[in-house]
Length: 447
Image (tube, rainbow, N blue to C red):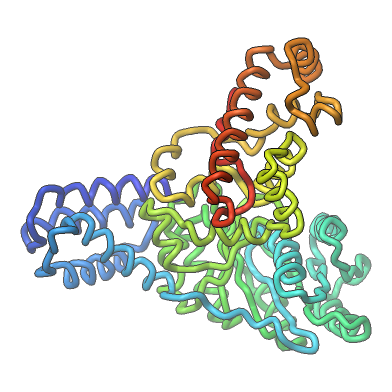
């Protein structure tokens, strides 16, 4: 995410290395490179210039205390200004009503239908609401089928009228149906086009007028850069939407849309989405995004994702087993499953301060744990619950069962034992009461 922009900003900050204070002279090159980095990231030149002028005004003459270098101070100023440019603070999302109606708009291919499913899943799990998805794209039968499949996947009802070619009547009928079924949120997935056209604009505007939605969300493909910002401006003139959704942030995005769309349309970014998994949706926090753009990590979001997957009862059982030195392979695999549910592995690691830059060129697959899982799955139930049983002959059988070399199995067993020893020592020191549940901290990928 934003790797190219991050590298260029890093390079700009290096110009201040070794300086005792920030002056107009030594900041000139840094500001110029920051502006160039933003323009290369597809931020409009006017916005980039105004942004860097603000940075220069704030930075010149700032006193640098002994503990903070000019470069560090500059990073802080840029982070604050980036956060402000992207909205400053989290924007509220209105999902209250009888029912609350949320209209989803955007161009074809921007990820509207997938986002609609993700939003329904988010509201159902995070807000304990009872959503109804509405397939109002009358031009693409595949969109209706896609929404039906997504609804089935997340356990949310989908309002379908495949023979009806009037999107407005579909939306109105869906709202009436929601009221009769005690559905308190209606999410309407509308049609998109390959480009903005009058027919499309009229249709989505008519739906808006017919159902009076509490939220109108414009879905933007982050990879389209400045074109997405220009399209958002056109949509906003007709719809006066309430917020923006940035999709495909896991793709090869330069960051221009994320950075400048709030400035252009004066509407907040409310959600960011990456990947196809239904739980890959995050509320947009400008300051956290600014930190990630600058390679500072986002430990708050990482902890929140962990808490979402946190099972308190399971954690208590595992903690009890750790205290008794009974942590086994079944427990370990359960912890792996929790981590996998948290999202894309490279994205998660990038949230740890200082790690993002180190792994940006590495290919970290979401299948990273498959080898470990295959080894555990090749064990008998007795072996999983009692690791001490596994001798040389058993290891050989396990290696054959999972298709791994015996050396790989031995490496995994050794790491597991080291991790159990570490847990035992921490238990003696009374450290586990202060730790998050899990116990994967000492485990490295053996292959």
